[in-house]
Image (cartoon, rainbow, N blue to C red; front, side):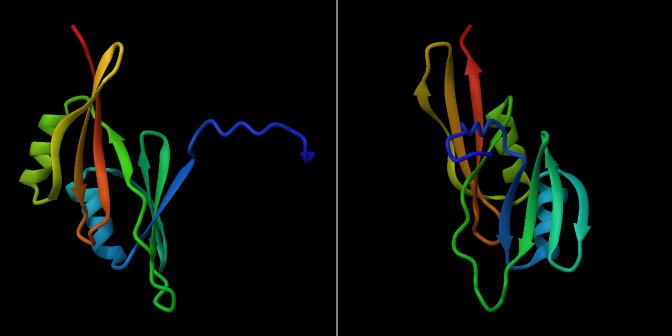
Length: 130
C-alpha cells in the first residue's frame, strides 16, 4: 500500500481484553454471559465469538500489569430482560438501563455492568419507535 492510499476500516475482527485470572474470566464470559466459546491458546489466551467479532481474553503479563480496559458495548434486543437475567446471575451493576438519546427513528438505551475483575461492559439497545 502506498503512503497516499486510502484506508477504510469498516469492521472489527477482534477485540482483546486483558484479564488477571483467565480461568475465572473464561467461566464468566462462557457460562454467565453465555458467549460462544471458540478455543484456547494455552496458557495465556481464550477466544469467543460475539456475533462475528472475535473476543480475545488475554492473561495479564505479571511483569507489566494491565491498564483499565476499554468498554465493550454488546447490542441486545431487549435491554431490560437481558439486564435482569445478568443481574440474576450475579453480575455487578454499575448503571441500570437508561434512555440516553432519542434518535430520529429509535431510542438508544444503555446499561453498564462489571465483570469479576472490575472491567466495565455495556448493554446497548436501539429501540425502534412504533
